[in-house]
Length: 381
Image (cartoon, rainbow, N blue to C red; front, side):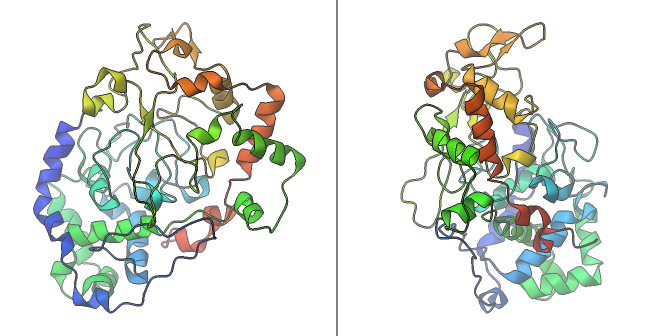
C-alpha cells in the first residue's frame, strides 16, 4: 500500500487536528465516564485532549453509521464494520465508496482502546484520532473519499441537520463552528474506544461463573502451551501482543511474518502488501504484520491480513505446517521456508484432535453481547 497520497491528504486537515488539544469548558463539566470491565481488564489509556463522555460516544455512534460522512454520500464507517461480525465485514478485502478495493482485510474496532497501533502494518499511527484520517481522506485506496471537492459539502450536511446541531452542542459546546472535522474525528474516536468486548464465555470462565467443556478446556490448555505456541503472540486480555493500558510502562509494538507467502524463494510477499517493509524499507520487515486480536475470531472470517484463508481450520493448518505452501497460482511458493518467518512457528506441533480442541476454545472468545447490544447498534434503525 502506498502512503504518500494519504500523507498529502493528512496535510489538508493538519490545521484542524492542531486544535484537538483545546477542550471546550462544557466537556470538563460532563459526568465522569465509567469503564465497566471485568477484573482481568485494566482501563485503557485515553488522550487528555479527548476525554470519554456519553455525549461524545452517542454522537460518534451516529457518525459511525451515517453514510453522509463519505464524499459521495454512499458509505459509512459501518459499511466495512458490521456489528454482527464483531465489526468486521466478512470480506477478504473491503470496498470503498468509489468501488476501489483496499489491500487489506478490515480489522475489528472492538477493544481498539487497548491497541497501541491501529492498522495491520503502519507503526506511525498511534491513536484513533490520527487513524481517522485514513478512511476519511485516504487516496490510495479511497475509502470514504472526502477530498478538496467534497470537504466543505460533507461538513455542511451535518451543520444543516438540527439533530446534529444539538448533539454537537452537547458534546463540544454551541455554535456552528463546533461542527468541525476535528470534533467529528474526536466523537468517532470516543465511540470506537467505548466499543468493548469482554463478555465472552471465556471471560465468564475467568470470573468463575461457568466451566468450560472438556474439549474447550483441552483447547485452553493447549493454547497457552509450548506445544501450540499460540499465546506467545496472542496474549493478554485482547489476545494480541500489541497491548497497552493505564498501567503499561513499556509499550511493545511487535510485528510478525507468519510464512504466508514466499514468492521468489527469498521471502517475497505480493506487492503492494508486504507488511511494515512498505514503511521501513528494511528487507527483514518483509511480510511483518500486526498480531490481530483473537476475540470473536469465530465470526470474523476470512483471516490473515489479506483475507486469504477462509476458515479457522485453514488457519490452524497453516500454522501446523509452519507456513503455507501455494502451488499453481500467481503467488506460488513455500512459506514454511520464508527466511523472514518468526521461528517460533516452527515449534508448533498440532494433530487433528489438537486443532479441533483449539477451535473449541477459540469459539469461547465470542462475545454475544458485543454482536447484539443496542448500545453499539445502528441508531438509524
